[in-house]
Image (cartoon, rainbow over all chains, first blue to last red; front, side):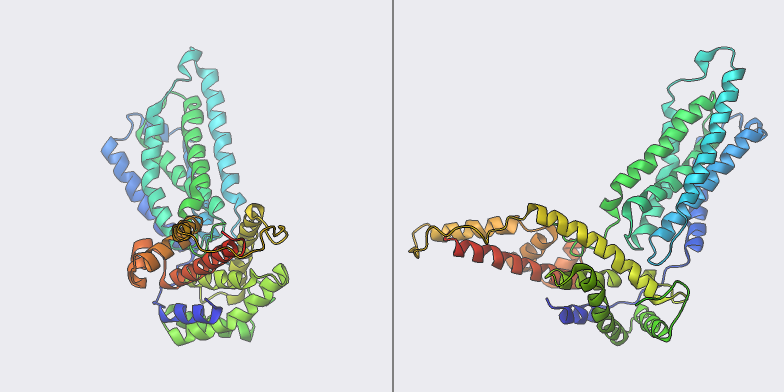
Length: 219
Length: 195
């Protein structure tokens, strides 16, 4: 097909589209949906018994704020990175994640010093993984739909950021619903799960964020 | 097409206006926009790829990408940086794709011709041709193979094939065109070499 015929075909099959809203607006919409999903999850699984005490712990609160900021900035940069011509600061969510990691490590050190019996500090806790993943699924599904409406400019990076955003918020839901014996467990099972989700999303990104198949002609 | 971010020349405003009308469904504005973009994109691609036969493929890739991503254009922002971001990414995709293709492609132009005499048809030549065609179809990229199978072998309409594959009608036409060209090349090469 020559290019003139392609132009003719594309203009003949043109349908109206609604321009995507600004990435910040889309991030807010996504956050509202994710918050409703996580509230429902925490309600269904019942909040952890010590949630009141934990919310009075400044370090716990700082960790949650850092996780929230990580999730929100990651979601924003993911959505903005899929809009041609925008150059979001993709280092921002990684900086926020580094702060979150540092706070969790600080908590783990504190718990290790306070613990009388070191063996209680760390144990396999697949419940944490389950609740983080459960909290991630809803926001990740909505994020995927939103990203697929945009342009697949950098599918790996965009998907990794989207995964980090969803898992960051999923971690928040998990922390409010699932008790943890120590911050060492949070460090390994929560942070580990969030990072694994982000990396997996990055690897799988090109499978669900791509140009139409004919455009992405294979060799 | 050199325009800094945030700067809007009259040309940029006009192209942005055409895109805004296109987003609202104005096919005349869209045709005018694509007709304006094609030579500009071709110039950018030619600078990067030289006088390669791939240039027109890349121009079409960019136009299809513009079509798919048209909802991402924000009418309040400059148009040309939006377009150039698509061009830049599609060129990078194209460079990776052509590098992979070149790595697998076998150049046959320099092979010695040792059997110059014309061969007569045999009883088995028909089945050989059919098998060669099947093999050539199997070797096509998936999108092109699906387009050929649905449109040419199973005689689907373009709309039916689009619904089946999730591809646009324009994309299917391009895939079919490229597949037919590839099949012709393969079968012509086979004939030239006496198989």
